[in-house]
Image (cartoon, rainbow, N blue to C red; front, side, top):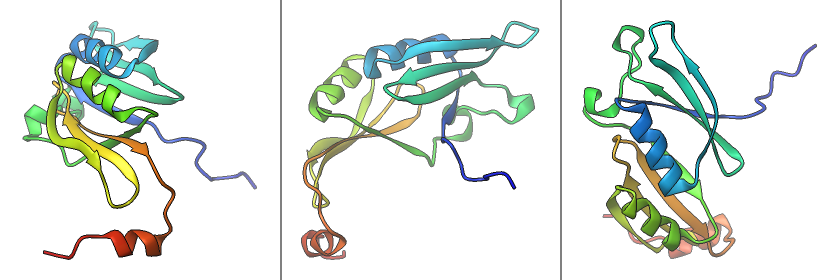
Length: 147
């Protein structure tokens, strides 16, 4: 019997401008291009990027394949989490590369320094640095009252 447990999970983002996406992810997150595959008509099928030890696939929007970018569908319900050693430096770098702040970097009750940016392609990124390892009970004790 084969092992059916996942070996990895990779986000696959669809964008209207693949080259702009690659430039942004390189400038903002230090991404490195590993592989580029094109369709026979020259469109980018996907580009595989390394973002630290993780992988990110980026493809040009292709409506005929239901591969739609955030502006086409009116936003994105997805939030990508990028954990780093220095979240403040990463946020400054992402903003300088063109990201918009949705939630400023701040100390959170669950023990992280955390914030959210939207990249120029419409994808949302949570940026985080772990500050403390807390138990579920400690997080619950620090949790703000429900609204």
